[in-house]
Image (cartoon, rainbow, N blue to C red):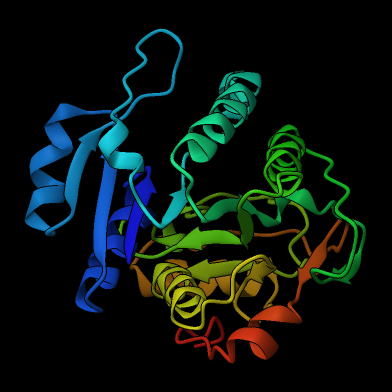
Length: 264
C-alpha cells in the first residue's frame, strides 16, 4: 500500500514514521523546501505540494497512491477558510483523476457546538465557531463523492511533544469556565487511532478521537503546569458552555485502547 500524507507537519510526520515501521510506503508533502530533508530523514518520500492560489505547486507523482491522507489546516482564524474549501474542492478533481480509492480527512471535534451535553459520531454536528463550520463543509464535500471512500477523523484538542498543555494557561488568573470538562488527545493516540484505521481497513466512517478521560479545565491544566514546573493558573469555578466528546466507532470498529490517560 502507498499512502500519501498531504501536510506532513506535527501530526503528519509522526504518522508517516509509524506507517513506515509497518512496511507501508509513505509519500509526504510540505510547502517548505527547508523541510524536505526532515522528511527524508524519516524515510518519508518528500514532495513540495502547495495548493494555495498564490504559489500553487502540484506533483502528480505524489497523488499516485492508494490512500490520500489530508492533514492541512483550514486557517479560519487567519481568514483563509474559503481558500481551504477551494483547495478541498480542487482535491476532489485530483483524487478522481488519479483514481485514488480511499481518502482520510483530518477534521476536528470543533464541528460540534458547546451544547452542554455528550456527543458521539451519531449526533449531528452544529459548529458554533468559524473553523468548525469550515471543516464541516469540507467533510460534506468529500463525503458527497461516490468514486472514493471518505474517512473522517475528528481530533479533540492536540497535546504532545512541542504542545505542552502546562504552558497553555501558566500564571494566568481569572480564567473562565474552570469546571468545564476538557476534550484532548495526545499525539501518541492520534497516530494510534490513525494506524488502527489502516490496519483494520475500517474506511468510510467518522471517528471522534478524544481521550476517554475528561477532567475539569482547572484540574487538568493546573496539574499540567505543576508537572512542567510552571506557575499554576487560577480558574473561576464555574461551568458555562461545554461538551464531552465520546465515540461509538473507535471502541467498536477499531477496538482501540488509548495509551495516554489524562488523569495521570
